[in-house]
Every structure is written in structure tokens, then in C-alpha cells.
Image 1 (cartoon, rainbow, N blue to C red):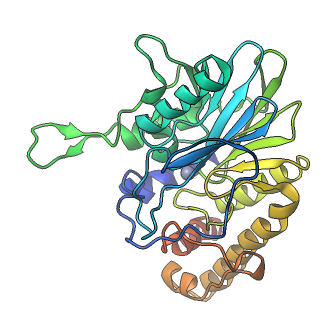
Image 2 (image 1 turned 180 degrees about the vertical axis):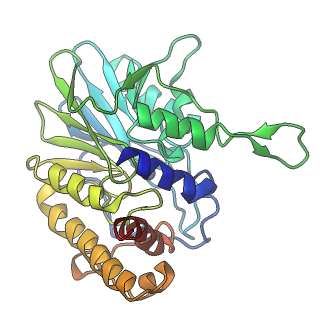
Image 3 (image 1 turned 90 degrees about the vertical axis):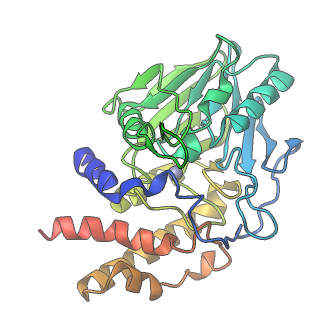
Amino acid sequence: MTSVSRRAVLKAGAATAAAFAAAPAIHSQGAANGPVGSVVDEQPFARLEVVGDGLWAVVSTPLNGDGQFANPQTLCNGGLILGDNEVVAIDGFFQPAGAAWLAEQSVKLTGKRPSKVIVTHFHLDHSGGLAGYQSGAIGPDIIMTDTTRKLVFENYTVGRPAEGSPFLQPAGRMMMPTQILPDDSGKTPLDIGGRVLTLDPLLGHTPSDIAVHVDNADVLYAGDLIWQGLFPNCTHAVMSALTKSCRALFDAGDNLIVTGHGGLARTAELDGAFMALLAAVEATARVSHRQGLSAADAAANFTLPEAVSDWGFFNPRYPELAMAAWYRELSNSSR
Ligand SMILES: [Zn+2]
């Protein structure tokens, strides 16, 4: 599965680096997503909310009133988890300024900078800002799966011509992992003193995603496997695996879910709606594929199910990209 999926990613091409920047100009923030916990800091690009004892969530707010990506410092959601011994940050964000802000917040809230950061998957809006956690010679351990490491390297360390410069430029100031989770590791405990995190290697949003469970709290950091209020980006998705992974995460108990993008939501509020969205995409993709329609035509035939009818789109092409993701699987299986 993994090697086929990785080929699909490579075939999907270089779109990722510029996925956000190059998207059409009008975006929608989607359904209302106000804070669920008390807000400890608020910036134009994100807010930091308390979601439990020693647990915080970053909720990114990248769009301005005109639907432009005016504030892309963090771009994705993430968070901080405090143990007796250390602070773990969830995700690397889009720009170093985003991670630097979260590291400062960690010092304000806990007296410590993060000593570990878990990168949920390779996408640039989760990996491009990692350098911001560094302070002089000191920086956190950077944890990612081996497949995520390969995909960061292959997608974002390649130089591209830049006008007026003799140098080729990679997509970002990339940082490679200092702790690599083998792809076949299964659920992996991480003891941070007084609490144990479980790193849950899944796949579906990309060929390798990590969700993070917290043993003594009803909070789940889901990365981009789960979104709220926004149609998910399926550019590199393995759709059948995404459905399975999301089912498993929703079945993991009644949690407050820190999604990858959009708002936070409890399992009970989001389970039915998100699974209905995935099921509707699958149904349209299967019928359209059988009829020989293009992914674009399949997307044109697609309507949001009732439960998510007020959700928005970071990029209006996301339904088409989700259809294309299904088409990759359906074409492979009929061969
Ligand atoms: Zn992503």
C-alpha cells in the first residue's frame, strides 16, 4: 500500500509546495468556529486555547475578510502538551514565525520551550515552519515517520528556478527529523512525565499521518485526517484508508478533537458529519468513475451532504481533488 501510495504522491506532482499560494483567490473560512476553551493568546494568524489540564490547541485563522491567505504564519492547527518533564509541540506550521510564536507561548505558559515536536505529516503547512522552534544551538527533537521524512525530502528540498537568482530555491527552510518513527512501528507510547502520549501512525490524508492520543485526557490531536467546517484537502489522499483511519479515530472515545484545519469539535458532534462527507464523496466518485466521467465532472455532480452543507472550501478545487484521489484507487483496482 505504502509504495503504491507514494508513487501516487509523486505523480500528483509539485502542486503541494504552492498549493495554498496558487489556489484561486477566493476562499471561504467555512462554518463558524469560535473558541471552545479559554483563549490564552490571539494573533491575526491564530489563537491558542486551553483544551485540558496542560493541553493547548492552536487554531489557525489564515484568511482575511476578503478570503485571502493574508496570515499564513501557522496555517494549520496544532498545540502544546505539558508533561512533568517536558513540553511537546504538535506540528511545525507553515512558516518559522508560526513555530517561533508557539515556542514563546510555551515559555509563557510552562516556563519551558518545547523539547519535542511531532510532525503529523509531510505537507508544507505542517513542516515548513519547523526552524522556528530552534533557539541558538537548542532545538526540540523533531519526530516524524520514515515515510514523512522521505516525502518532506522529495517534495520540499528540491530547488526550483527563481527569477533574478543564480540559485535554485527549495519550498522552505526545511528541517529533517532527529527521531524517526519506523513505518511499521504501530502505536507507540511516549512518556513525558505524568502522562503518556500515544503516537498513532495512520494513513489516508497522506501516505503517512500521525494522530496523537493523550492517556489522561479526552483530547485527540488528529492532524489533517480530520477537518471541521472545511472540506478536506485530498490532494495526496488514499481515500479508502482515510475512511478507515477516521472511523478508528472517532471510535477512540468521546474526545475534543484538535483538527488539522478549521475549528475544534467533540467526537459526538463531528463523527456523523465528517463520515457522511467522506461517504458522499465516495458514492459520487464510484458512480462517476463507472460512467467514465472525468474527476472534474464528478466534482460538478457532487453536493455537500446536509450535515456539512455550511462547510467552506480553502480551495474550490478540493472536491475535484478528492474525486481524483478516489479515481487513482478505483483505476488501480480495476486493472
Ligand atoms: Zn495536510
